[in-house]
View 1 (cartoon, rainbow, N blue to C red):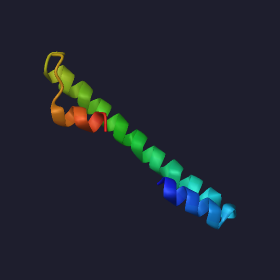
View 2 (cartoon, helix red, strand yellow):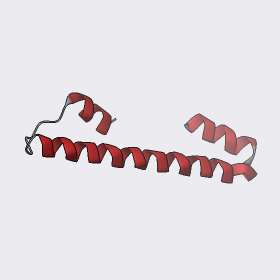
View 3 (cartoon, one colour):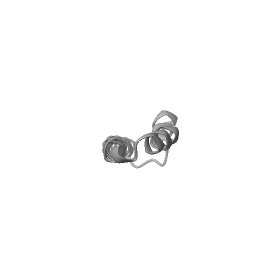
View 4 (cartoon, rainbow, N blue to C red):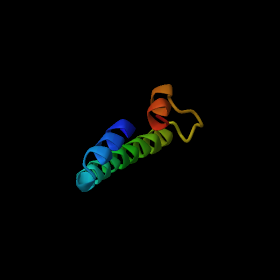
Length: 64
């Protein structure tokens, strides 16, 4: 992503708003995914009786 940003700014600084919109959209997607993972984590905790163990797959996804 960093190379894309640098090339975009150097190539056409006037079109930075398009790049910012793409970054904003990606940020919204990441926040939505984070919310989904938090809900899954809360559900897993409730099902395990708050047992302090998280599946490796869920932990990897959450901290990716």
